[in-house]
Amino acid sequence: MIKNLITKIKRSNITKRLYLILFKMVSLFPADSKLIIFESFLGKQYSCNPRAIYEYLKENHPEYKMYWSVDPKYSSSFTGKDVEILYRFSIKWLLVMARAKYWVFNSRMPGWIPKPSHTTYLQTWHGTPLKKLAADMDEVHMPGTTTENYKANFLRESSRWDYLISPNEYSTKIFKRAFNFKKEMIESGYPRNDYLYNCNDERTIKDIKIKLGIPQDKKVLLYAPTWRDNDFYQVGKYKFDLKLDLDMIREKLGNEYVILLRMHYLIAENMDITSYEGFAYNVSQHEDIRDLYLISDILITDYSSVFFDFANLRRPMIFFVYDIEQYRDQLRGFYFDFEHTAPGPLIKTTIECIDEIMKLENNGYALPENYEEFYKKFCYLETGESSKRVVENVLRK
Image 1: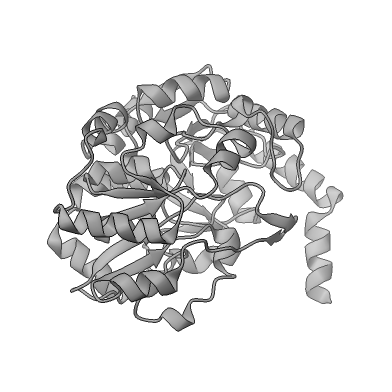
Image 2: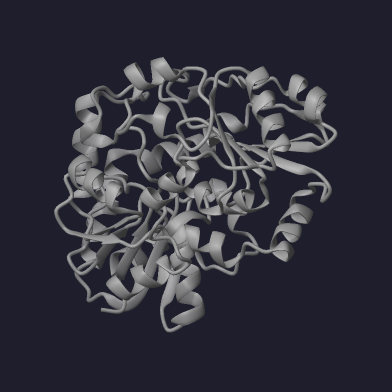
């Protein structure tokens, strides 16, 4: 009861107004030119582009004072990471955020938090777009908002960004239009993919498998589908419906393969795979998907931007798109002809998925003819030095 009362007080309009006044007062003081705040996916993860930039700075420019903005419910994700954390919306967070010279985030900030005039906001974003974004979306099907409100809030946020990272020329054009972004674009490749070039070795792969408890003698399938905007019953209650038949895959491929399931955090907690112990692994809470890419022999996905990143490894992909007509025509819409451009086969059933995996086995995991063309369009900037490019463009000017 006391806990509920404290939560109600924290969320009250009076508390927010007082907090906002204090934030504005602190932001009147001069910025600390060496102070940087990082945040990934609303403080839930130590991952993605902010992590890559942080690790590059820590190794090459230790003169910076760096903090991570963390949602207290996800603080365990930062245990043992040798990072200084600030709990989101705490008084200490407020004092540091308002004095920071740089914010490095990969998703949106709450609109009621003002950006001080002395702060440089580097927005890294978190994916190459296949699905339509922000102003380009015809309709928004997410819970708790309308199409008009979603777009207005998004564009209000993007107007605060001083820099935006783009992984390639294709994304640059879309980001400028969809986010109505008029400031400086850094076309650098994604910093998070540096890891796929700099750490793709037997020792690293072996260590990750040991950490996750995955057999060294089994090949690895990674199933990483996107989130579907309409997969909810009501705000806060989300559907879980695993379309892949794990029983069938285990029966046909279990002697040689294990499967990693990387589901969206909103539904991952509802997934029970205890009956598949030793074959299926729920890695939805693993800190950073980059580790899962490295240890996987084949990616199974759908419309998720993970396939743009995985392509950097030049390993095979299978696209399990059982609802492609609905997703393409009703939910989001695509920026290009996905059916003809996808660097791998499109399938709709578990049986087809198994068949494609067996075909790959028989042809030595050969890549399709269009894979190289796909790589040259979307991955051409990735060389293992994207973090360095970003830092030199923003912090080292």
